[in-house]
Image (cartoon, rainbow, N blue to C red; front, top):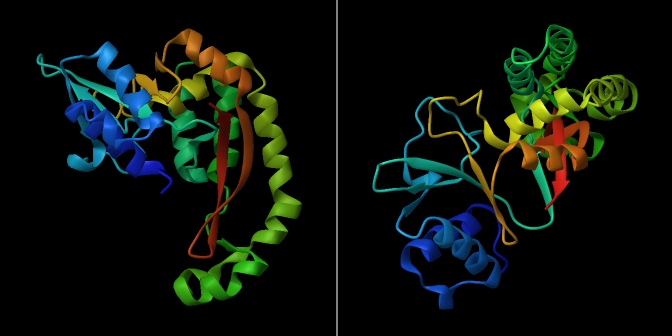
Amino acid sequence: MKTTGVDYEKKIVNCYNEKNFNKHTVEVCNAASFLLEQFPNGKAIHRSEIKLKGLGGEIKADLWIVLKTEQWIGISVKKSGAVRLSTAEGNRTAKIFKKVASSLSPARQSLLEEVADMVGDLPNNMVSAHNIEKARIRKPKKFATALDYDAWFEHDREPVNERLKEVLSDMEIRKAIVEEMLTGRRDFAGTVGVAEYILTPKYFQHIDEKYVQSVAERVKIDVRGKSRGGISSACVMLDINI
């Protein structure tokens, strides 16, 4: 059976802790081996094993290596292939953008705050024509007031998308956004929610300036909808291939 998402992360934790490489796929074993090479004497803990009171579900660390010094090292886990760095709704993304903006020069701060305001106004209750019946059954209250997703996508999405891409063509702004979406260093400062490393079946890498630069140069940014239960929310998507 194909291993995806949370299951993949948990198997890495198990393989690292138990060193039972014969029970796991090559991808899981590769990832666990990278961890053991860097941290041979730690303990791996998955995010599902601890309470994340007050942090919400958008933290960047998927697991932690806990050292004897009681230091918790946050690690973001990604599979090979297409990876999405962010799928937060407009209002949540706008708050992150504004935190990032405060670290930039005044001119860049102003530009990013302008885009944040646009993103913050993105609708979060829409329904497309092909999801009408699903939304009516699963989310009847939201469906009653939902906007037309297809009309939004055709008429309202592109101006926001174009302005977002224009502002994020500035590499300093782009790098600041990418770093935050990778690590959560501002949003989750002082908590276990921060990811300092990224782990894939191909490499284990500290998320430093050089890594952020390489991701920023390749990341694709787009505004589009994310559907749950037939109801669509407009989100800023940051996608990259690992």
